Length: 279
Image 1: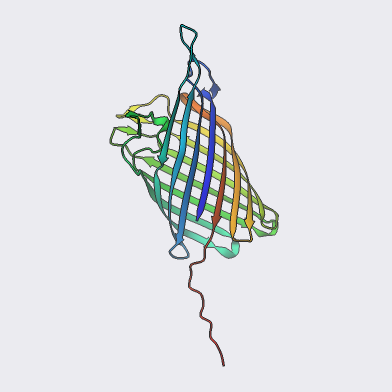
Image 2: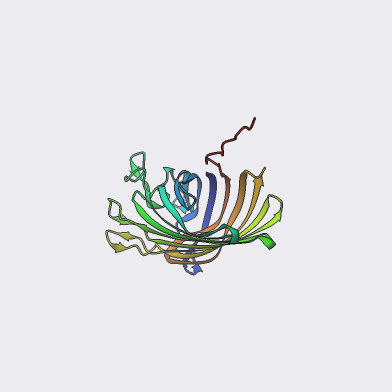
């Protein structure tokens, strides 16, 4: 089981691969998110996973607007609530513990806790601060792991594709392809350093089958990570996401940085061998 928290901050607009301040409305956008995930090993190769999360806030702060009487006007929009949940089945198609090699395939779906958009004081919030997509999605994944025990190093990758279905309001979020490569190295006992390189590609959203111009992107992120094993049972992990390349369709607010903390633990629920007492 894994519990995690993430804070994300954005204050820069991009048009293509270039920064832009032309006719931009927001000063910044940010969110605080927490989630929990559970995985259960049905067999040595077959695993069932479930996850869900909650946005404490998804906030947009506008720039100051100067009115004709020199009055400064600004506004803040905030959404909050449950995000989408997910169910995934994974199967190890090639597992060789002695050689520390594993290839696992997975498939699943994501579901909204509500198919209706969030409203505050009778007003529907814009999509950028909605806590959920309000629609279903299907996903597939490929996981690869290779350990090098002689140098206490591990190389693994996660590749995932999410296909978003159209919501009942006719809006379809873009599909997402995510490719991540991790290098993990033991520093001292119970303490590991991890470097992640992640590429995300998202297609344009569709509104009643019409392309939404200001949507879709390519984002390359570097994520240095530190992990500490507490008493060999609990794993505490801290990371920082640093975008190193951005290409955004149209004009969009883009992430500046993100930080996250997670706490995980493996629990052995297998049957214990019986103890036989010999008189």
